[in-house]
Length: 295
Image 1 (cartoon, rainbow, N blue to C red):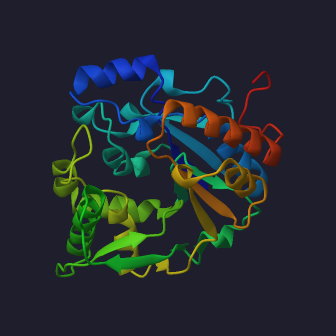
Image 2 (cartoon, one colour):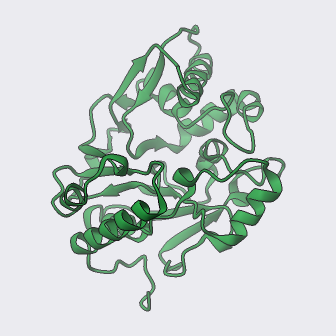
């Protein structure tokens, strides 16, 4: 079992310059702001998921790779390694998700992490995969009232077409945590609906995109999903008091956590960032094999 992590550091001046050159939109801080917590995701994997075979870090370019990353232990994957060149550069996570299965030497079973997801307590392989099936809670919803939900609806529509099912209005939403993916199934879906996937790709996010739920929905329709909730708790820094944030991190009650960013003032961001980093350092003080010794 492998882990794939997608990461963007919106403070990187090289990335900012490229973003400005290729788009005419302001940088969305809450989507691209760097909280400095990536190393604790790696430490959580090392401590709580020792069964992981390999970790792949997917970034747009070399300037995005944190200086502490130990490349002897982390497979750094650049967008150009997996995404057709005609769709680069991209500042949209959805085209990236469509091509993760093309990572070289990727295991058949892999977990796709966003960089705001963290293993907080000891996990077992069976928490994520059993008998060749992914484990995750999925549910269907009716109303698509924002762009993200419209993208989810698009993904359900295309997944149903790939599976030979008629279209219907409800769309699938898995729980927001690391996604258990099967490489061979992703390859199968891509081959079946490649024109639809390629036609959905845009440089920034739009309501015409497809996302990773295309693959999970197809897996579910083909009986390759066990519909069980992964032990996980969600936390939004937008409603966080300092004491609640510290307790959430230092005294975890669930195996996995997702800590979501929101629009914050610069002063509030700096305050909560320090609390978050101090709390993670208390929970996971030991450097992992994924960090170089001098970091």
